[in-house]
Amino acid sequence: MRQIMVLNAKGGSGKSTIATNLASYYATQGKDVVLADLDPQGSSLAWLEERPAGRPPIRGVDATTKGARLPRSADLAIFDSPAAVHGADLGNLMRRADTFIVPVLPSPIDWRAAEKFLEEMRRNKRIQSKQAKFALIENRARTYTRVYSDLDERLRRQRAPILTTLRDNMNYIRAAERGLGICELAPYATATDREQWQPVIRWLNSKRSKPA
Ligand SMILES: Nc1ncnc2c1ncn2[C@@H]1O[C@H](COP(=O)(O)OP(=O)(O)O)[C@@H](O)[C@H]1O
Ligand SMILES: [Mg+2]
Image 1 (cartoon, rainbow, N blue to C red):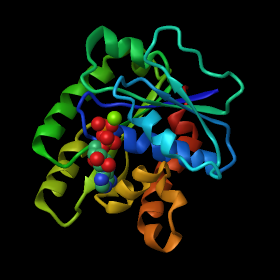
Image 2: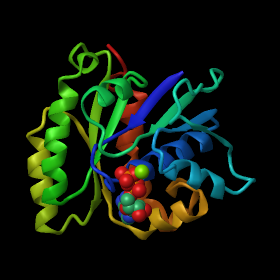
Image 3: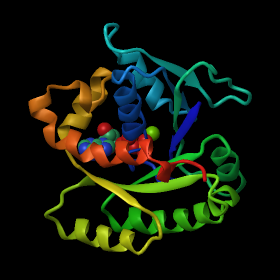
Image 4: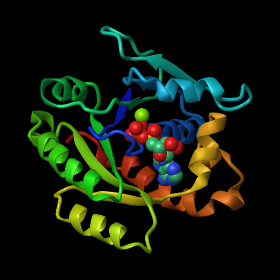
């Protein structure tokens, strides 16, 4: 089973938004998806509770408890993770997946924290030995702003792929409300967002995101 984790020690960077959108995307592709929530806040599981019955199903797992089992028959597990994970906790968390996505917001407080966090991630043995891969997403961007170009410049100095820039848009809020992903909203209203997700999907489907 493929295991993908969205993580960043900073709260509010878009982990749950990205985890739920990934789960929704793969479910609409006919995959058997487990959404495993490692965050005691339970945002991903709360999202799943809102999911209408007629939509492609996603299996939720509360992964906060030790020994929480994932159904092995699933095609993939998407892990949502809590904020403020560092040190040994981060190491333990990172054992549970082989592909990591780190969302970062365009704000100095966020990118400074992200730089430190990425340093810590890079020291991880599985990352060093390429048994696990990670990449970045610039999230909630207003691309015409100075602070966005500053973020982009800072992140480009990191030795990690930047998969995409997701715009700051109400579609994410509307989808979250209803237990849906943006790919399940009206196509005409979400064309830009769908397009912005394409490189993420391409990366996840390519060897570049998989253990060497
Ligand atoms: N691209 C986006 N556009 C608009 N709102 C967003 C976007 N990404 C996240 N949000 C909103 O930002 C807030 C924090 O996102 P969330 O996914 O909960 O972050 P985290 O899980 O890292 O704490 C939520 O209210 C979410 O709806
Ligand atoms: Mg969250």
